[in-house]
Amino acid sequence: MKEYWTSLASLLGVLAFCQSLMNSVFPPELRFAFLRIFNRVFKLFSTFCYFDITEIDGVNTNELYNAVQLYLSSSASIAGNRLSLTRAVNSSSVTFGLSNNDSIVDTFNTVTVVWEHIVTQRQTQTFAWRPMPEEKRGFTLRIKKKDKNLILDSYLDYIMEKANEIRRMNQDRLLYTNSRGGSLDSRGLPWESVPFKHPSTFDTLAMDPVKKQQIMEDLTDFAECQSFYERTGRAWKRGYLLYGPPGTGKSSMIAAMANYLRYDIYDLELTEVKSNSELRKLLMKTSSKSIIVIEDIDCSINLTNRNKKQSTGSYHEPEMLTGSGLGDDFGNGNNTITLSGLLNFTDGLWSCCGSERIFVFTTNHIEKLDPALLRSGRMDMHIHMSYCTFSSVKILLRNYLGFEEGDLNDGVLKELEEVVDRAEITPADVSEALIKNRRDKERAVRELLEDLRSRAERNEKNGKLRGQNGSLEEQEKRTLESLYAEENGGEEEEIEDNICKSSDDY
Image (cartoon, rainbow, N blue to C red):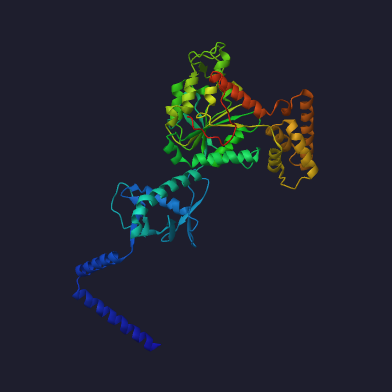
């Protein structure tokens, strides 16, 4: 053991002598020049190139650094024993990222890149107006030289877009309403907001599953087809009209749409809007990726069919619509919105001041609305919210009582299927019956059946069955056809209630 330590000491002495000899023979300037030449030769023959993305660019925060950090947090291939967890303000989820001096491999268009998170201690700072962080952070991107153009032209833009999408998905959604009398909030905006926490989804929505799937596909096509709208010269927006009896789930449908697309909702109260110009200003202050809602539009302002009001059939000056919804005889005459202003709000030049917006109108009486408001390009899709069907009753039984397929006996299911169409009951009424007895599932089903039977018998006695005069949806279709026939001087247009209908006529 003694000989081992003696040999080690001798070796260290030789190394120290060689180092002092090298320092005396080769001065520091020569050594540094040699290292620069070596690095240039190494880079010349190396197949890789490197890009540094620092956290702070001069005195400003580097937006690309934050985007890369968010993008890498969404990568499923990230691995390691130590990860960094963060949760941003107004965020509903926790994101993870690379820890200090860790690396990750990513693939873009079959090109493999390597990201490394470099963290070093910053040198002692002199006096500065803006103190710098103690640690110097940055990402180093290593790519092959032959892929340099592809990465710089497309990959970094893709990262920025992906990061913006992640921020939007992680943020809590908001429900906006226009300020009373057009007043501004503390930020100078005419909208007041609260967190949007409505739990409705398409899974819990009491509606025909086939129709729900068609609506979901239409929403997905809209959100993912920016290039299509740009190529065809159309504004990136879409209109939906939800119509049907009260209690059929129109508001729940809007909440499900917002949760599905993760859009904010702007609930526009027309009775608080004074003029067409104020209506345009409200539209300009809405953000992209949002749903603009006007509920019960036939009750908010007077939008009755012009052709029905004028016996001569001629069209005169645009009707002035009061914000009170009661007409000039009852309103103060100051808050006025014209039908033309509302039409331009949904389909005019000002409606194109943003992108990726959805307009949703709801009404209980579609026959009261003016045909100009119903045409394609304004309301592209007419969705009939009908009474409960057998499939929607099963969804409600699952939501409120936890019944899955096979939990109910065949006799009860058969009786439900036979009586539900004749009962003409809304999802709201079924929900109330199930909520009232949710602690006793058998009693809830029994009382629901009794209610359905009594409603069916009453409808048969009063002659109100849908089968006698055609389905309610068919009646609404005939109403729409008659409205369009009047609008076009008696020439009928075919109105399709197909949920996936897309308009070519703007």
